[in-house]
Length: 244
Image (cartoon, rainbow, N blue to C red):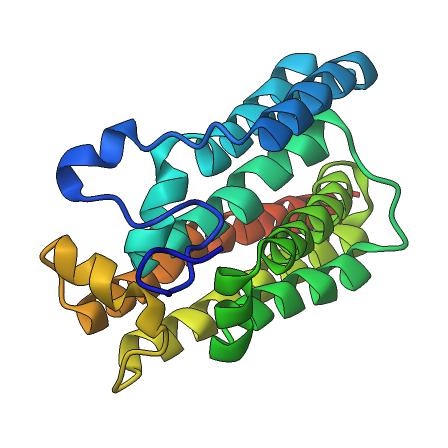
């Protein structure tokens, strides 16, 4: 898609001005149809339909609400968007409708690779400029993360002590990947994603500061809860081993 100035407009639309941000809902008919079919199928198939609906609402927040449009303005919001998929929607879907899995390790590798790939500037530019690539990258985040959380949550809840330790290590590993990405964003000396320069400036934010804030988002709401979950699973494994 091209705007009147010849620049590319990403899937979620042009960056909204601050005064218009809360009216920038994404009412794309194919998206709304897909979400409608998903919630019907999910509530029918899931043994925990309310949990599935909570995960579905996370997708609505990510792709329908003004949060979607804000991801085109501020890279820090894009980081929050990624965490919403990987750290909220995916684990809720994993609880409500666990995926069949070859093992959480394989899904960990896929999830980590998707997170890293999203932050390669050339790949990010391709997702910005092309709707097909944009949705491919969203799927590469959500679906493997769904499988990852299915595996580690099942292993951390009902597995033996060894399985629980593996689950804790994998959760900690995902936290480490997010921390590494966050460090790159915080300490980069230049703007890595120039697509967000106009939006950041329109919002009164220095583009480099916006990028650094994105790194802090990966660290604090991304890394710390995962590390806490990994610690809880490891403690449960220790108790099971100690009292077995």
